[in-house]
Length: 215
Length: 171
Image (cartoon, rainbow over all chains, first blue to last red; front, side):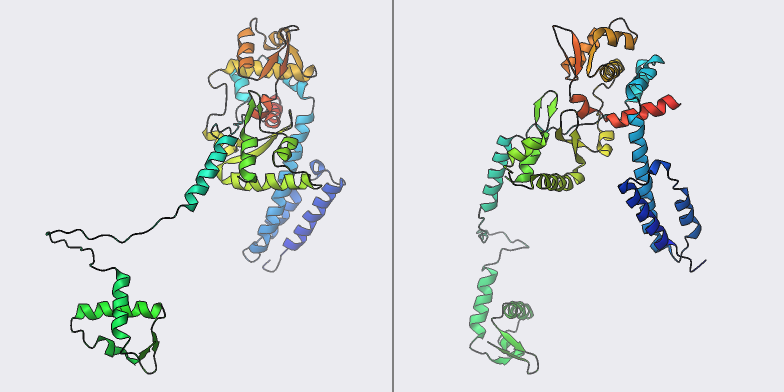
């Protein structure tokens, strides 16, 4: 049972049926699909379930196709006579209304979609896309009040440039040497951040083996 | 403006009370398609647009009564929104079914007398007038013959209705 895997065989059989249907040799309404489903059911196990998912999908597709054919057959059988027969049973309004239940469709009709509107929307979209925004640095307001978060005196990029100008005369030098004149820990940390940015921007390079910074 | 926006426009526009969307010829004309493989191109366009519309709960449908392609809500959304144009007015559904039956029987035409008989009701004039006003049918004033408009193909899944009827008769 463990090694029984009929998925390939079932897939081939379904493929043959599909070909037969397409060539008109097989009428799905006359074909019993139960044997296929029974075969899947009887031979499926935890060892072959992965292969069987495809077989099951193919079998269900075949079943759907059969339903479609049945629907087509039903609808082609003297439909006006069927309507008449139904009306002869003198159904009341609610019974007739219930017959329509689930058969109504809703069309999509969106008033603002007109050529004029689409043209307008298209132009507007293009204009919005081409607008250039400039990002300006915030101006520091003069105030006597003390705030916890202060707007920095200089732009970050300006600070990095100033730091670079300051240390470039020293280069090449050891990594620690660039912080030589700074005693304040916050100051050292700030300069370390600048240095990381300069390394990232490739304006300064670092040689790990010799612990040297150079341009 | 691209093919999708033009297709959205032509497929969702209301030409008249009972004409929505466009025929294949109109669609190809609006996109200025003239090449040899235009049918393949047309099929590709509709398939492509369908893929965009599917996540929105919309689908492209074909009304075989007037050969128009149009956009409609999918089944799941239709269940959520009220698609029944005769909600709370079952009398109109009943009269419409009689008109449909009569038209199927008489090569597309019917008369008030015939509908009255099928409906087993003395007065169907009010229902007929409302159905005419809502675009479901047209009445020839001179001959008083009644004809269904293509609107029923947009509003009703006829295939589904036929199946439901067949099942109902089996009960």
